[in-house]
Image (cartoon, rainbow, N blue to C red; front, side):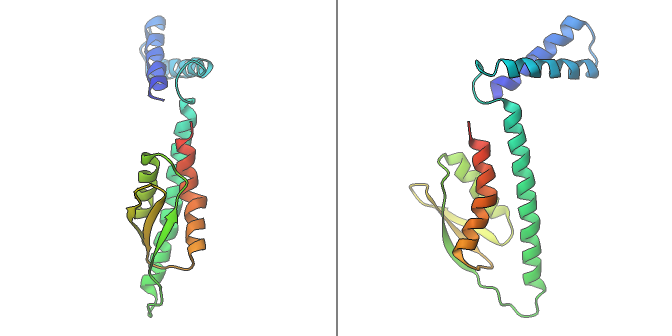
Length: 159
């Protein structure tokens, strides 16, 4: 991905030199032409087309913001209730992620979400130990993480 971005920027600067016009609008035009060239050269450049990765990262940010808002609403409901009837619990989450950076990213996203905290990761990197402030069932908690955060983290990591 970094090679593609570098090639795109170098071709954009080359476009400025060729046209002799050093305006921002001309740079954007050169960037778009260079983007088309990078797309056409995607077979010889390493990794998948970088715009797809950028799209997946933006999608991850939006999914995380939605999960963050939902978790904040859940924590506010717990705080506002006159009687504390939540059931905190520890549970083990089995992950299908393989690389260390994907597991670390998922763990950080879980920890940044209010009401949950990652306590540790198993040595074989298949289990994440989580504490949840309001535990319903393990299946619900696991399905919630798998269908939202782990899914988009896996999409970002795909080649």
